[in-house]
Length: 250
Length: 353
Image (cartoon, rainbow over all chains, first blue to last red; front, top):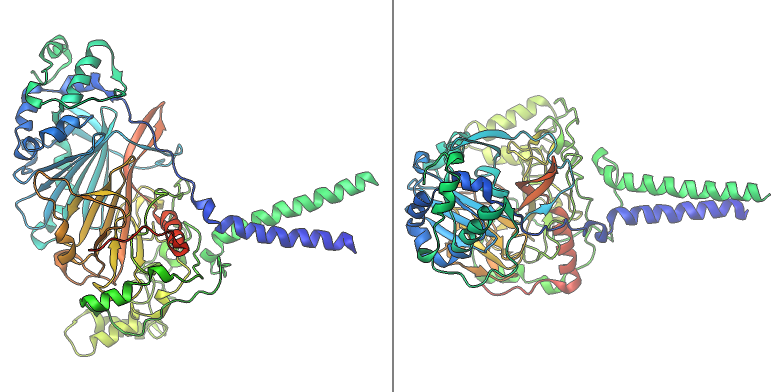
């Protein structure tokens, strides 16, 4: 008798446990791992970084009024060049150091272009993006893989440069703006023109240090107090040394 | 004898393992195939909504009364497992009509998508009770048809023509309600919760089968009244963007998650419009605005609900290096955990508007 009851009891217990495993909130509390800030590929950046263009870009009103935030930004800031037709008149810049956001309201009602960059990633298991179709974008002569996604209210493009993660988002939420989101043409044009690079004072220091001695560098353990952008060293000597690889003359 | 006993023990262990596996499979897949799912807790009832259409109540007293239930959260919360979408929401047909060919070959989430908790310490983004479920495939949604509407194809076609060919004609609202039902249907305001990330949509989502699917989780607030219930900041955030019906914020701590709130009342979120040269930091639990049914141009667009997204830069190793992708991630597990904390009395303190 006991021989029959014991397996049944075990089965009943197992059913209860089986249900418990599937629905336990603890089972869903597993959190993906946040990685250390990624190293910047300064060597690749040195091939396209143009201090003259960067200085001009820094002169954009929204960046100028936030010099302190620009200077504490540890990664290269990417902006759309003139070929994109994106207006910078209403530019707003916000930085948290290892991540930044640029808000570009356009002179079309309901049309906004958002840019962001980050060096902080969350680890995924291999294959999470298996089979995903990345498009090749010619970004100022450089082939860059980008993922374009139609969103609830526009388009988003995600791409990586210099080891960082960058995002372009176009939001269309008024009649006048809808044609900009009817397909991916507008965001693709912006993506192709993301060629203007701005470095804050801290990033500039890292750039100078890294391109003088190696390909990549880890972020400094103690960033220190940001300096004024005007006084930041311009890396003309290093750029001259690498002019052979630099399609954009300084 | 000892060998016999050993075999018996092994058999029992094998049965236990088998049942454990079946139990797990059943929880994950049972509902997908129309099987009843064992709820996590007690009954599945909550506030029943009797109004037949979306109510537009902007009165602040009514709002406070309706939304101030946070401290008296009842038990009985149940939810279905992450990735378990409504059966027809991942079919090849958008409408579950009996005469439509549904292949059920499109399984929603990609098998490789991680549905873990992508924001473990998040505050629940709505004040009061909430019901995470599909807006599209439940009463009032475009992917739902009432029993009367499904009675025959001729009935369906007649109702559809009446409801949608000329909305100004007499009786079109009745036809629409007969066809789709009402978003205020009490069944929409009941547990269990159900994941609807990767539900069939035209938008792109790399984590869904076919790279198409819903990019967030839809959550109904406590009632179907528009502009009554408050959305809450999920963690300490900065304002990233304010559009006509969407509010986008970014966490101030690594990994600097982006949260998007859609269908918000434009008048409330306009308050957060960033001023040039300033950064607005909003504390976790702060009221962000009232949830509605708003869409482009600030017009009524959908049922009253919050479309809640989490975006992250997720990196996977590719050929020995990390490839980061800024992507939507499934919010469901984070929402379940945050809601459970809230019901247990560990909600983030909600600060005044």
